[in-house]
Image 1 (cartoon, helix red, strand yellow):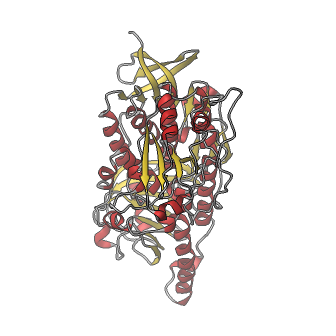
Image 2 (cartoon, one colour):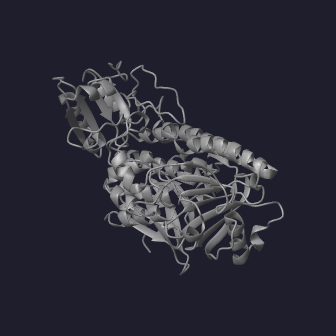
Image 3 (cartoon, one colour):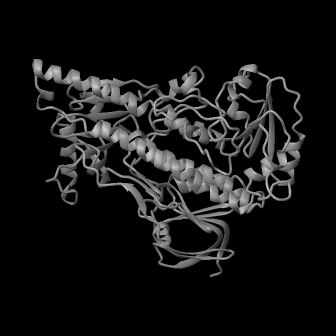
Amino acid sequence: MEPIEVDVMICGGGPCGLMLANELGRRGVSVFLADEKEGTAFSPQANATQARTMEHFRRLGFVDELRAQGLPADFPTDIAYFTRYAGHELARFKLPSAQEARQKARELKGSWSAAELPHRISQKYVEAELRRQAEKLPDVTIRYGHRVTDFEERADGVWTTIESRRSGESFVVQSRYLVGADGPRSFVRDRLGYRYTGETGVARDFMGGRMFAVYLRCPDFYRHVPHAAAWMNVTFNRDRRAFMAAVDGKGEFAFHTQLRAHEKEDAITDEDARDLFRAAVGIDLDAEVLSKGGWTAGHSLVADHFQRGRVLLGGDAVHLFTPTGGLGYNTAVEDAVNLGWKLAAVLKGRAGASLLDTYELERRPLAVRNTGYARGFADSLGLFTPVDEIEEDGPRGEAARIEAGMYLGHHGRFEFNIPGITFGGRYDGSPAIVSDGSHPPEDAANVYTPTACPGGRPPHAWLDDGSSIFDRFGFDWTLLVLGATTQNTTAFSEVMNRFNVELRVVRISDPEILALYEAPLVLIRPDQIVAWRGSSSVGAIDIASRLLGHQGGGQKGGLAVLPT
């Protein structure tokens, strides 16, 4: 069989690989994606889509499809803590339903000014939607049930050998680049000789060591548990610590419990799994086990490198989280967002190959940052241990529950009200950013200060016509022209045209938005990151050349001094 020729070969059909296929396919880049699983995820896995990820789904045009899936529109997305699910409620952190989130997004300011708020949806639905969207694109081919068995990097590309799991037949995909988004046991990462670095094997009373996951159906849960429904349900007792996410709001749950030393996951039958669930509920409820299996909490790992030559890595292949804060899958999506426009620009000849070197420079520090935050959340929850009397009737038990409730209520806000993590990731020091000498606000998990300091997410604002400023950005590059300036932007348009780069010029006269961005000219990258801001178009050739990895800029001997 003749080799299949494409621009990019993607190994792995999880959130990172599928998101990358969408980013590339929409830019006219041909893609072949292979995953050895038979299809997208059946079990729930990740259960929280952060607001920044939802903004990217909005940018790609299918955020409404995702917002309509998962929990019913009016289902509470609260995080609630209990001794046991049918026992005492200890604390509750209230959050808006999907229906309420649409309206609240237009009302919130400051830290939570955003085009989209978070959405509590299982990864199984997200993957299925990403696959549906990718398969609509004419340049994208997706093959589940196919595994990568070998690859060879050559001067002009990568030759990847793929085997059908059903037939055993092999074929070769010849591509310009290979991306390994093939999970924590990444074949591609291992072949490159890269290894995880960081912290692993952390033991905690909860969220450390071996955990057991049960995807189950229990329609009677809401009829017999005497508490308001919640999206995330956490137990706090001496016997059976667990967390459980509502999957469909009708009785399907993703239940995860800490295994004790004597509990061997390989020996856990479906009936044993039901018993684990019943112990967490505190009453005898029947449940149908849909899937089950063990996993390890206590990881905070980042690969030593994300790329080599024509082979790049993303998602769990380069960072492995303990899933507190819901940061792993969202970090994987942003890997794809960052890499997608850069690969397309290089493949189309619009950017120099050195632009791809900024992928690891930008994304690895973010992976270290985010795994660190997740570790802190796991410590906060897992190292706080229940006292013996937490479930007792009487004054001692009541006092213990009040104390635990105060702590857990604080923890809920600490882990789930995280605009700083969601919006505050930055790419300072990257060659694909032109600094103006300003300094961003301090990085903090629970507070986000909007800033147009180059290197971060543009400040969000709602415009007079009711649209988000993000909706005005182009799919490629955007030049914001703010305030009453009569600034001539021809220089930017001409240089981007010279590089065959689409530039959308957006003029907004609102003085409040000019004050928010603190400059009349702001250049926004395709991944909706502020690349440069200033008061003049002078030096546009050097600015664009640097941002696109065209060494030497517009002047012989290198880049000119860039104006601010």
